[in-house]
Length: 269
Image (cartoon, rainbow, N blue to C red; front, side):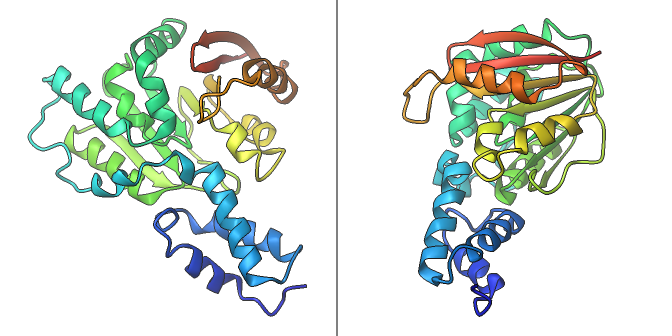
């Protein structure tokens, strides 16, 4: 069914849209192929794929991010002027809903998490959004390394500009986490508020990704409310789900509760 429709043509058409033009095309292809098994209606397929892409990724973006990716985004700021650096990072993080929700608790968030960890000298940030801009709040070791991955190339360009400007040993790359997992290891893996999004495409995504984490420590979190601010019993449901997909034979699990986020700190046994 639907063999007469060329998936590559649909990808090109979908990615013309402002919400999708910087997104990893592999995910779009994955969704199109799934839709082609259900329908041969071109308009219906495009509509459904756009809707799913928006739900799992584009809804979190502020379109202003398109104007923030130039190499001079950080002007003449220096790392020594930490207050000015933080102010700039805060203004940029407002352009992504997931990081914006965390801003009111940002100091407590990373203080509490890192107080429960040994010294960390390398970080793997999966489906990172703009979270690497939180590095000024992370008490990382000297000469740390930071690898970040997300679906949107323009956001990765911004993060790479941040790394380059402040001479941070880091890289930011486009990646579809449903199909690929980074080969490099790190002391700490971050997967923040991502599992529910990915499980809209693949119900086993959370379990599969957790099984691939090789770090000694990992931080996995879930939203405490929806983008519209509704709770709907989400923390309780997410906690139950997390314990279903996380292997207790591999990980020791510690729960940390924040007003907007449910966090699990994992330590490999």
